[in-house]
Image (cartoon, rainbow, N blue to C red; front, side, top):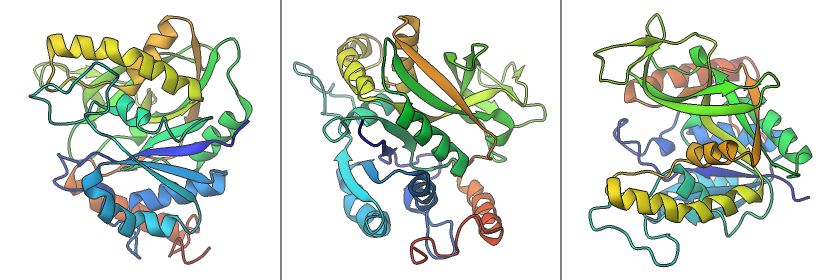
Length: 307
C-alpha cells in the first residue's frame, strides 16, 4: 500500500479577506498558516505534499512556501483550471472561476495513486487531526465499501469573532460514521451559536458540540475515479441552472456515495481549536494563537531552520 500523501487546495484567492491570504505571514519568521499545517503533517508521517494552485500565483507560491517546504517534503504542483473538464465539455462563456473543491481535488489525479488527505490551504487544523487521518489512511484500504474518513470539529472551536462562517454540519451513526453533511453557509458565533438561511430574517440555534466538517478528508484513489466519473452529471445540471457560479463540492460527491451505500466515512474527532483567516480582522487572533502555541513548545520558533 502506498504511503498517504497530502493534497492542499491553495487555488482560492480569499475574496472576503481581500487578498491572497494563503501567503500572508502569521508566524514570527514569515511563516504562513500552511507552514504549520505542513509541519504537523510531516511529523504525523506524511512525506509528499501536492499543492493545487492557479498558474498565476505559482512564482510567489514557490518562493514564499514551496521552496522551504521542499527541504523536508517531496513537493508537487498541479493546477486547478476551469478548462480541466471531461471530454466533450467546454467552459461556459460567463464562467470566470474554476469549479469548486471536488474539481480542486481532481487536479491531483495525475500524481495521486493511493491514499491521500485533502485540506484547505488557509485553515489551521492542529497536530491531532493530521495524526488521526494519517493513521487511518495507513490502515484502511478499500474493501467491499470505499473506506474514507473525515476529521470533525466541535462547532464552538471553529467560529469567527468577525462575521459569519460556512460549515458542513455532520450527522453520524452510533459508531461514528458519517450519515450526511448539510452545508450551513451563514453561522454566527452569538451567543448562542446560530445559523440563518434567509439573510438573517430568521435564525436557528446549533449546540456548541455540533460536529462540523472543515474540508479535512481522507480518501483512497477510488474517490478521484468516482469524482471524475460524476463530473459530467454535475456539469449538465450546472449548464441548465447556474453555469456562471455552480460549484462541484467535494462533500456532494461523498454524499452521493453514502446515499448509494458504496462508501463508509469514519468521523475522526479532534478537540483542537481550528484557526483560519476568513476575514482580515481574524489575522491578529491567529497570530496570537500561533505565538502562544510556540511559547508552549508545540512549535519551534523558526519551523524549518530547526529541522
